[in-house]
Each structure stands twice: as C-alpha cells, then as structure tokens.
Image 1 (cartoon, helix red, strand yellow):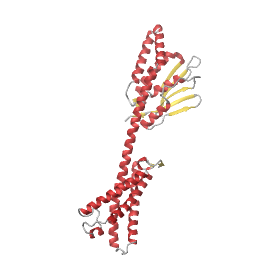
Image 2 (cartoon, rainbow, N blue to C red):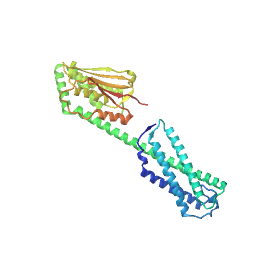
Image 3 (tube, rainbow, N blue to C red):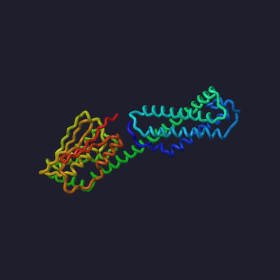
Image 4 (cartoon, one colour):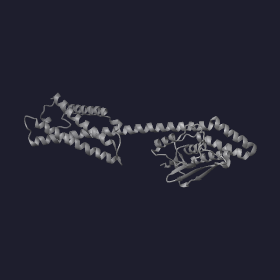
Length: 356
C-alpha cells in the first residue's frame, strides 16, 4: 500500500457539497414517507407521534447530525482512496469496514448524548429500540455514501482514460505527420533522388530496389494504426535500412538479433524506425568511422543500440524525439522506455506488449 495524492474528484469543497445534498435529500425522503404513511425507518418515538405531526427543529437536528456523519465518512473515503492498493477489492473492504465503524460510533454517541441531556431518562428497552432503528437508518445512509463515492471514482477514471486515449491518438497522428514530413522534407528528398540518380547510371537493379524500399517506407508511414506487431514494424525497418545501406555502403551496417517468438508482440508504429533514423542522423558515418546499428530482442523488449560517434554539428531534430516516444508508451500501456548512455554506447529499449 503506497501513498499517493488525494483524489481530485473528492476535494474538500466537493465533499462538503455532497454531504449537504445527501443529508438533506435523505431526510426529505424520510419526511415525505412520514407524511404519506409509516416512516421508512420507524422507531418507538415515531410510532407514538401523530400521523402528520412535523417539527422543524427535529428535521434540522437530524439533518445536521447526518451531515456531520456523511462529511466524516467522505473524508475517511478520501483518505483511503489516496493510497494505492494491490487490488480494488482490498480497498473496498477497508472503506466499508471503516465507514461502518464511523457510523456506529457516531450513531451511538449521538443517542447517548441526547439521552444524557434529556430531562426524562428513557427506559433501557426504549433506548435499545431507538439505537437499533437509528443504526439501520444510518447504515443505509452510509451505504448510499459509499455508492456515491464509488460512482464518482468510476466516472473520474472513465473520463481520465478517455482523455489519455484521445491524447494518445493525437500523439500518434502527430508522430505520423512528423515522420511523413521528415521523409518528404527537401533534404531527405534531395538525398534520396540524388542517390537514385547515381544508381540509375551505375546499377539499374539497385536503383529499382532503392525506389521500392522508398515506396515501402512512405506507405508504412501513412498507415493509420495505433499499435503494430513487431514483425510488421520490422518490415518497414528493413526497407529503411536497405535505403540507408545503399546510400552509405559499407560505412553503415545493421545487425538484427530478433527472436521470432516476439513476432506477434506489439510496438507503437514508427517507433523502431525513428530510433534507427536518429542513430543515422546524429552519428558520424564514414570509411574511418563506420557505424554499426544493432536491433535486438530479449527480456520482453526490443532495443536499438549504436556506438556513440557524435557529429560536431548536429542536425535539426524532426520532432520525433525520445520524450515523445516515452510519453506515447506511457499513455498507451503505462510502460517506460529505457534509455542508457554509458559514454561509449547509446541504447534505447522499447517494451514489447502481447496484445490480448
């Protein structure tokens, strides 16, 4: 059980308002039932009263007592809900037990306090009946309070989930847009067309292959998917790697260590491609300093790593950064992206998720 901050949906201001509405509404219901028949929670005192006798001070007094009780129960619920439990069942049990104890203590305390100040002491049997009926009434009110709290909690988490899903969709749209913009920006097109032009005069077979890989990368970028299998993501990655391999030749190498058992696990679209793109973009690639980018699976994750060969002048980022990628994983699966830099090797591990 870990402590968190108090739930937003149970602020003290809202607790005061909820307690007021519940206590007034509950006693209005009892008053109406009193006027149109026997009380829903009749006791010895109410049976002795005339059928349509109404005393405002009694209504206000019992409403005030109920308000105090409901307010304290709501504060207790707020306190318990500020902790993290392993299961919601344990949380609910503690809430119910604590609320019942608070109700019983306050109910018995109010009755004894009232009888202590009464000029005529009631007999024990009458006091027992009053206590029994009051407990039934107050426990019913407590059940209403707990139900209201659980409904507020459920509504809050549904709303939060909807907001996070919408944020994730927006992030995915932005990522696809930025990825497409990156692939279509003048710098990329110039390099791609320049490479293609050179290949046409040297090796038409390679030129055709390069054009096919470019088409595959652009087609993958335009896909409208929230999640994608590792196998499908790797198809695009291989196309992109083939393009870079043709462009840089032996100066750039890729090593794939993929366990096929992870093929059906899921990643976010363009996640691996963006990591490989960053490796190529931010590191020196030359005959003196060839770059090896390794893509590997293991321990429920897929990683992209490369030796650090930082350029003296870094290129401008295209917006698909590690912060963006980490946030997308947190929103979608509540999982963290692991980033390590030991000074010689840069590695990013993406969690693999088995989609049920």
